[in-house]
Image 1 (cartoon, helix red, strand yellow):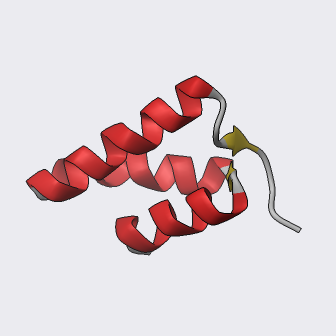
Image 2 (cartoon, one colour):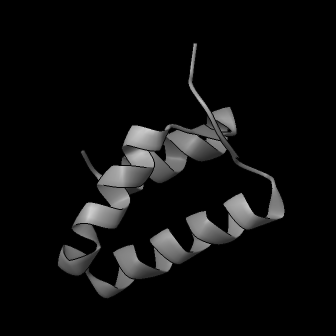
Length: 57
């Protein structure tokens, strides 16, 4: 899995799955600075309610 792809998929669908969120938390030690910033942005979008935790159909 790639964080950039995951970010774009979450932005376009408005949904992130719990498995994807688990992947982000399990791999955050390996992230570059850009990936860290992307993960923070993803978290902020979740906090703001622009991305929902759920499943894609």
